[in-house]
Image 1 (cartoon, one colour):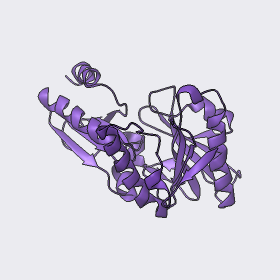
Image 2 (tube, one colour):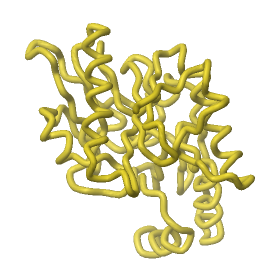
Image 3 (spheres, one colour):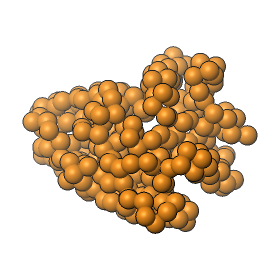
Image 4 (cartoon, helix red, strand yellow):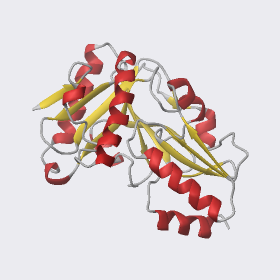
Length: 253
């Protein structure tokens, strides 16, 4: 059974992203719950399988979404995640159908989701969405694609902002790390990556997004996390400290 996480039950329910009982996971889960509580009034919806596992979907109106996307009257999927033993059972389609049903009931023109040109870590599977009738509505440097499902052919496609399309940031530092609490792990990764950059002789800046407006102006196309080098987008990927240091030495020295 799919259940909705709302203000009324969020304190008593797990939210999939961090479900361990250790201190670190409890802190991660609380940061995500705090973020969600402040977004419900902006139209955010969080639904999950009523099981202990990572099977959930999160979406909200394009007008209030924390991504550099422009448009009107669409819902945007922040995350659709099905993992482990729950794969291959049709849960991705069922969760997407929940979003489609809500969008049509609310009179929306369609649904959008950020993907990429090919299968990449932490980005949603393009092939799945194309099979459901989505189309590529826009692209952003270097590999992002904005997919959209329109309910009518007359609806205007949503777009990435020009800054996002060009893969640029406003920071003058060598490395710029931008993130939000929409994902429970980003605060940690931003700190670790910044330390790696600085011990290799680079200056760095960390920017935590605090509003939808902030995210639309400064966020990466991925939304929750972005790494920029010399003002240009480098990666959205979360990786080990060792892997990021290798990336720094290979691409940035």
